[in-house]
Length: 328
Ligand SMILES: Cc1cc2nc3c(=O)[nH]c(=O)nc-3n(C[C@H](O)[C@H](O)[C@H](O)COP(=O)(O)O)c2cc1C
Image (cartoon, protein in one colour):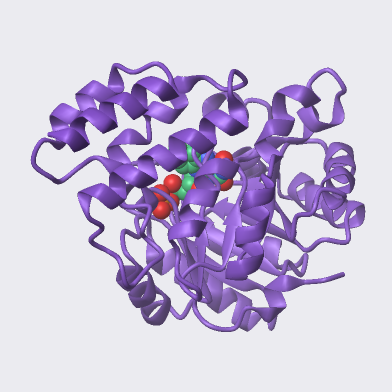
């Protein structure tokens, strides 16, 4: 087994798995703007193991695991690892999914034990597994048995109340190469603030149990500096960045944290072209619209430009709006 996690020594920065956000096109944009050593691991959107294991369901979910060749080239060039994230509640489907994913060129598999969305939790997957430690263990073991790839976990600190001690010490028994802890309970969804003292507790439990598991903290980190500060203060191996990337796709860069308007609009167009080329009619253009505010904000006329962009319904219209703006 090639366990890439073992080769990561310094403060590790990870881009979080985010549904309808971290597809191959946005990952490529982020990679292209990132500096070496500022970003180490990125994740796919979470992918249903039940979907992957059913012939009829597979076409609906497999796009979540798509990796363009252009993204693969950048991953290699920037030495960033790509991990496929899966979720479900049936160990046998995790085993089979791990086998499928092994053939797809990923560096690792991550099991989602954190998502709090009701319709997912109802199916017994993701954060529901915090209340089913035995099943969670079977799922980890089945994923490990199905694949030569390293299997990590991303989770939260409890369901209704914080149970970091018992939950994390249970997970650590499975000798995971890496564990990401989002410092909120399921009940909190995205409300309140992540509790970094609980995340730190996870790292101390790891030390006490003398495990090699890397512990990454997740929740509310909005800059590289803040991430470094959290790593040092809480003695963690790294931090995972989710919504921070909405502040700026240049998040993982120390040189260019104030890109010009032209740079931003050029990247917006590049992203829209890549999205169109990759997904054409397979994905709704509305998904792409959510990204406009990431590129168009904090400059005179940004709100008006954004409003015009929100009225577009295809790539040509986006390019026209941007061209008109550049002419003014
Ligand atoms: C739009 C969106 C989609 C998400 N999709 C996933 C997902 O597919 N898998 C997952 O483990 N977490 C998912 N999350 C949770 C994030 O990975 C992360 O844990 C959460 O946003 C907290 O980190 P942050 O404060 O840095 O954003 C999603 C979050 C957002 C905002």
